[in-house]
Length: 266
Image (cartoon, rainbow, N blue to C red; front, top):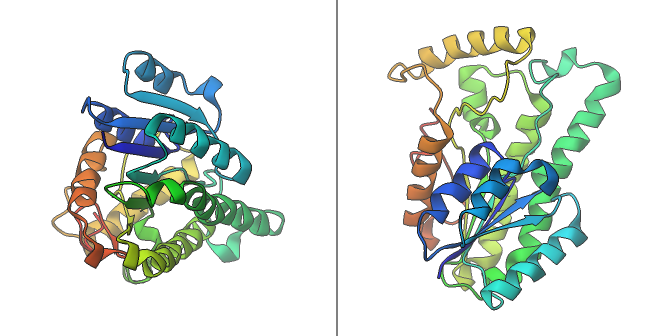
């Protein structure tokens, strides 16, 4: 029975990972959320699915993650096949700002918050579940990154906004490399993936963000002329990511790829 842990599973891409993986009755799927009381949609899915378990753990809380790993081990007999690090932080109100335009009182805060979740939180999550992964059969760890964390893409397309988020995702890609090198001999595959440009909005973005997104869309269409100009829905993005994950081998461990399994980011 393949087992999966997905962080940030309450909504969006994380929820869709849980939904798609739980369709296979042989899979055992664990959705980790920061707050169970607000994870209504996920809890409803779990109520109707015998193979879905919902656990509460903030990835910024190392002790909570260890306790979650203990709960998983009780159900899986001490093993885990795949860990999907989906939880992330993006400061929405200031995502449209360039680093030089940042209000001084928020710059360091947003950088720290981004690193605490997107880098340190992922490391803590991997470390908490690593003993189970080492005993698993599939032995795969996926980290959701972003094309904004790719230096060439940011430079060539001209993406100057969302500095704290982008910097933290670039750091995350190096984290994946470090784990890949460390555990290559044990056959554990570590992969960093961009889910593509995905529509995860639960409400209209602020006007400044809307304006920046229009400008970004124009630049993306120039750089990716065959792109249809539309964001992916979570269902399609997750389906593509799972295909990449399934095909990933130890020879590819440490790679940073798109939902296509290559460097095409749209």
